[in-house]
Image 1: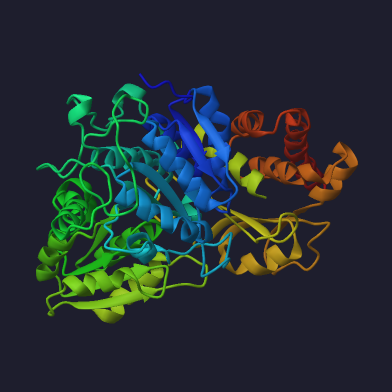
Image 2: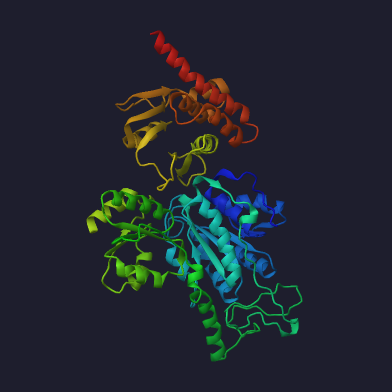
Length: 382
Length: 169
């Protein structure tokens, strides 16, 4: 069983520390990164804790190298992750694409801060929402989880590892400065209560092994380097054996596989939290820390007998298209509250068939959207 | 300030058993600059993580007092470092020279925040003294436990001395 350094079950801890402890509980034994506010505590904690459980911590020369090291460690069979913030996340995009193409499980934590560029190191934003989806080039299908509390930092990091192992794909944990630097009381589960998923291993004879085998699940068993299975890994579009291809049929097959393993499993990947949605005509759509303000706002609205509810996507990507289409049929108004100039609202508008009013509530001045602001918006727009 | 917020959250949350959410705000400077620590306490689940109206404000600088006083409730408690905050708002104020006491009696201004926590425990019901001392033991950096505990004790006594003095009058 996974031996963790978690001693007492109920503790007051920092969001970033919960993230690091979640990684260890999930079985992460390698971290490579470059310190950046507001994510540094994740690296700091893992630098202390990983060696205690037989893991390795490396501070690399930059974020490009960090994710390269993480990918290498994962291919060697070790669950691996890195943590960063906006500027570092930009540098990592190249290798996020590589991990996606080469189907290497790994976890990238982006503790969002204000941007663009160096922006606001110690202040919050949710302006990397679209970058998490479209940051790297090519047809890319991201998985991104968004915790809104310290307890969720722990659990969602574990889930990120599980999804990345299950689908052989990079998974992004999209947190932010407030969640990362917030302290809350968390009741930790016993390690036996934590569900852990490990990557599927090949059972075929090494001579028959194909690292990128095409099968009905879209996910190929994965042998580690040095285990006796010979294979090639490349960022070039490749055949099931891993060597580059220029055959249109094989190219389409590979890209369909990458797409289908996400889109055919949306129901497994996507998690949504609802409040008062059974009879709501108005919904506030918000993720991460903003969802907590929204939750208070819909409670305020209910006290005034306004039929408002909350839709909080716990997974921001893939976007819950089918669910939202269904929800929009019931709703007169959706208020999309986010700490940017309007990113996730585009997704809501994309799936909207036209009858529901979709309005944005945006804040990008480094402060949180307050419950009162959302409540006022509900009153104005209803 | 952030350390004091953490200790108070630990005391109220883990030692006294309420729900807490502590957040912080500071600038990009490595040293100096304004810094703030927010704490929400509730017996129920905490939705919004930041306080909207304050029951208690501890201001260790004039700037902090000026900036955050408007958020204080009418019956809210205001505690200031009387050595550093001289322009007081029109409100009942508890003033103690925390920084000066820290420097004179413990030899470092670093523990002014912990003396202030002691004063909070003595003046309000928000945190128990026992919980505060336990939290300090747990959270103080190695080697500073003694002086931080002493600082909290000074804080407890400080307010008592003042109360007694008031009674005599």
